[in-house]
Picture 1: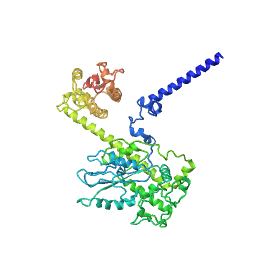
Picture 2 (picture 1 turned 180 degrees about the vertical axis):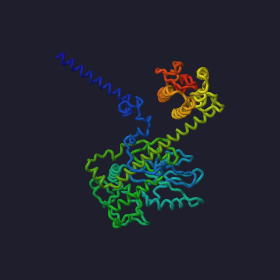
Picture 3 (picture 1 turned 45 degrees about the vertical axis):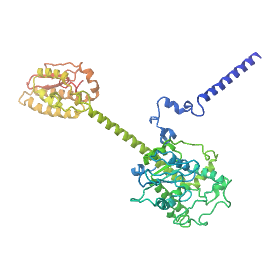
Picture 4 (picture 1 turned 90 degrees about the vertical axis):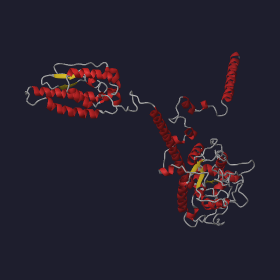
Length: 554
């Protein structure tokens, strides 16, 4: 009994300790704010951010780490920076597609942009007044500024034919010298999530009956666009019923609303086959999307904000937030149903893949361009600061304007001049020049070892004919040739090892010693340059270190 009771007390103590730890953890890290609970935080604590220095746009979703471009776009397609003049006649037109997060983005446009003259929004009113600075004209055509002036959720076909006339009627009293520039923008969403969100919205009683669907100057007939329900709304419909209606406008809604419907006979399905109709609409939607001033994706809120700010040179006050807790995310759909939704929205699936590829490529292009411009600004600033600093003779940097001393001559010139002097004078002069030469290190980058070898070989050929007369005895001529060959070989070995031992030249310079052998032979332990002097029988060896203290060091 005592053992069981003690065992029970230990278990109770451990449970209480565990409960206490959970309470403390919840107090210190409420919700999901404790970064230590995430595996990615450990790499951040170690300083690793996947090479991106903690880029908030990369940390948002990690899309760029997995992104592999599939489509080729021109620089004009990727560099979307427009000359939007809010004080002039330019207008931003927001094409709002159902259930893409357009309501949230529309509120950002009227409430969250830093403007010289902010939009006037009043409590209890859905629309805000967005006027240009110093004018009574609006610069924004959207649900929250002008209302549904072209119909509820007007598509591309309706807006392009309706917006110019509506804007002219609104500002009829204003005299205008130049035509307006209309910059169309929109938001897209993953087709499956958008489809499920629309189904839930319709299930709650939404109908969008006020949509006009005007195309080529007229609305579609009932035969061209039948209804999927008989009552006032379709509330309470199941997902199976929602997918079963062949006239459901939720199918491929994004492709249809971005395409030019005039190309396929509007809503008249008898003009061409369904397959041909889909191909034409999809190509038109891609083309219009590519030519739009801007489009964003619901799944990438921070990147959407960044591209909008860079495109229009406007800044938002508060950053966008990524909300994943939507009604569509709460719907538990089996894989077979999801596959059926993709089949019903095949055009939208292909359009979204195209849009996502273009969107991420635009983001990468903009970020690279931004970094390149920042690097150029830093370089210009360094040049400006360097220009203010007086010239100095040490190290690298701006070359002094005064004439350098004689020791800054080229390597071949020094060698040719030194050969003409006596051996003793050469050693004395070069030993003194070694300690007085402040220009040599600055000249290392200007002299190359290839030029040096070419010059020495040319000099060697000239010296061979001038130094060794052809009238000498046959027994001494091979010896001179061997000496010349040995000296040339050692010179080349010294030159080849120059690059490898350059970084040690200062430390090892003091270790070199001058060695002169009267018999005309070179020492195998040192890399000496040996050249026959003008005396036929006298050979002299001298160190290249003394002649060239900073260029050749063994």
